Amino acid sequence: MKTHEINKIRPFSALIDACWREPYNLARLLKDAIAGVTVGIIAIPLAMALAIASGVPPQYGLYTAAIAGIVIAVSGGSRYSVSGPTAAFVVILYPVSQQFGLAGLLVATLISGVFLLLMGLARFGRLIEYIPLPVTLGFTSGIAITIATMQIKDFFGLQLTHTPENYVGKLYALLQALPTLDIGDTLIGAVTLLILIFWPKLGLRVPGHLPALLAGTALMGLLTLFDHPVATIGSRFSYLLADGSSGQGIPPILPQLLLPWDLPGGGGQPFTLSWQTVSALLPAAFSMAMLGAIESLLCAVVLDGMTGKKHNSNSELIGQGAGNIIAPFFGGITATAAIARSAANVRAGATSPVSAIIHALLVLLALLVLAPWLSYLPLAAMAALLLMVAWNMSEAHKVIYLLRRAPKDDILVLLLCMSLTVLFDMVIAITVGIVLASLLFMRRIARMTRLSELSADDGRLVLRVNGPLFFAAAERIFSELLARSEDYRTIVLQWDAVPVLDAGGLSALRRFIDALPADKKLVITDVPFQPLKTLARARVQPIEGRLQFYPTLPEALAATGA
Image (cartoon, rainbow, N blue to C red; front, side, top):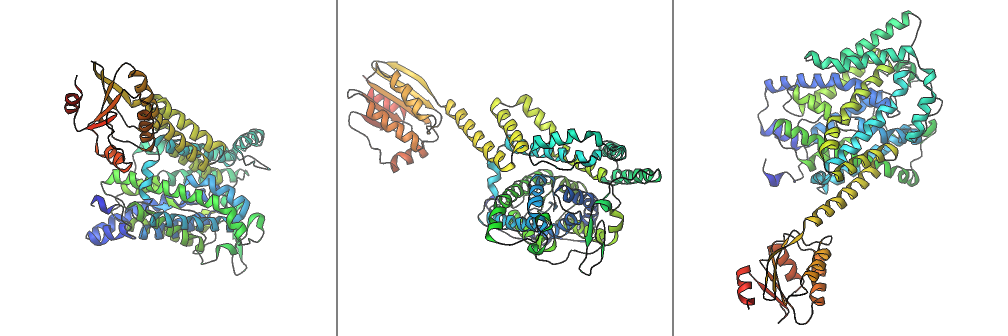
């Protein structure tokens, strides 16, 4: 793909490029089918676990993986991305679901889809490049810590009457609840987690999620024989269908078309769609959109590196927006591209978005066929699954490497973003992180701008300016120049190493010229294009006996020689 085509708005670009512009045959369909089934096996338990962690019944995670997975695969800009619920959203979705209920969560998802769509249409896709690595590592690690903490309750089978909203309060409540630890839940969680950890070392093609959950369920059955029941999806969640029938666990029906605001709100009360509730949901919706944009585009970049193909960032944002707009009308919560599932998709041999579509169809099939069986999955095993997801999400090896090898400024940004994400909010963390990283970067660049003395004789001082003359550096440079030029009548500045002159630098230059004594003269040579353009726009002109410009340093020296 040509470079200028990357920023174009091309809806359905991934599907068109992979299945239309490139010949699609039976061999590729077979590869996509194998990859889709592989990812589907991973996605089914993850979708349920993430829905539970987000504070909603597990079937809504399956609805998300199915509906949003199909819509985004068809309309997006990355041919290998697999979309659905992801762990990163849990810290945002859980408070929304607790306060506004399922209806509020779906409405917030719908609004976030509109934000994502507008981002894509405004061509904001390339802005992901302006988020520093310490910021992304910081907030993803912070989210991982928060998710891991949220799984302690189900992993150990703790009994909590009330869960505080702030992180410190959560930790204190969990410590107080430790005496209520359930041996059965803990044993199931530990066995599931150990299998998840050691299964990849066997080198088998079967994903570790399946044998780990099967082992956890088998252990639950054994404990039941000894009259030690444990918490399962079926024991915690129930459903009520439109025909009046009810049941435990997951309803064995396909997603139904519905209006999100008709579902129950916070505390089971009816949800009122009004400007007041929409305004209250806007901050959370914006957070969802920002996180969805960041995660989906980071995922696409990772996949580009794995496959050598190029994604269309703006089309991907449009696809993500379309998925999050349509999914709530079928009960789907917030979705984005999942890096782990997408990477598994590539490793399984996927060639096009068809694999993601097949993965979504498998999820729908599981709803119809496996729903009664999925109700027997123990919650401790699901918690172990999310603990593994949190560990992988944290990218601990990258964090450790950055802490050991990176500059102190980057370490500060990383730790601050991580702390703010855990203690407060992801949006606050990203905002503060980007601002701090930008300020520290500007300080670093400003320090790089220096004056180098070339010669000093016969009342003439010749200096070379190295680095950009922008607002953070210019004042210091010209103040230093004023001090160093006290004993000289002519000051020659070579600007060949000045790539940028901004308004702050221009203002500092004017003040320096005004501050020069009447018997002194400033000569500037070798002005690059950008500073020359800035000087021309500001109408800075030579001043007889005070300010002169020359194309090269030798010409300036010849003209000002004694």
